Amino acid sequence: MIVRIMGEGQYQLADDKLDQLNVVDTELEKAVSAGDEEAFGTAFAALLDFVRSGDRVPDEVLHDSDAILPPSDSTLAEMRELISGDGLIAG
Image 1 (cartoon, helix red, strand yellow):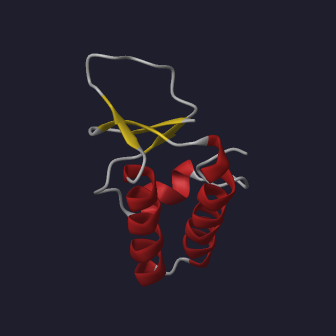
Image 2: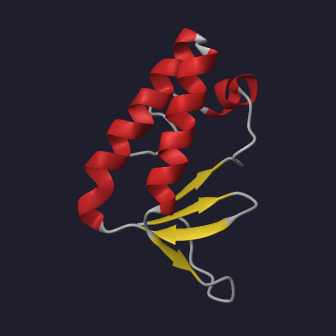
């Protein structure tokens, strides 16, 4: 799975990491739905860190992204507009 963090680059995550990724994404969705700023910050940082734990795709190599995450400086209000009932990661 290829995940892009806007303004940063793409990361490749092994397929066996998808369930873990969805767990982290669900925590973010819960925090956003609750309007909990502190939980949002923690959950969004955890999601970005999880994605960054994958293999960085060199900038000169372009792949279609399976998921696109907003930049790391996104706010709770911005995230609320982006998250659907499935979180940021569809799966």
